[in-house]
Image (cartoon, rainbow, N blue to C red):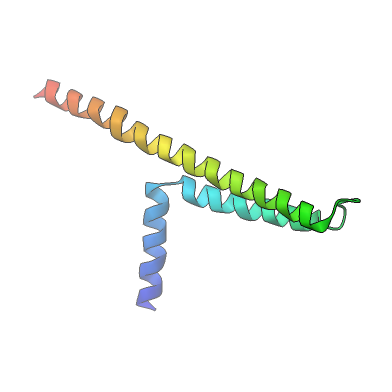
Length: 92
């Protein structure tokens, strides 16, 4: 049971460090769920084409979330932290 709690706390810690990973995962599962829901009403579209569109949409969402996450991380590391260090140096 302790290893389960460790894994859960590790996931929560990682999610707090980079909140776009859970958002990307949630978006991926939402798009796949919606695509499976719409599977019956796809009209005359072939199933393979529908699945390819669903995969591309889900992957696009995940790549977008990862890109935003990297940009946010770079913003924190290269803009926010230097400003905080500069402020701390001015006060001393």
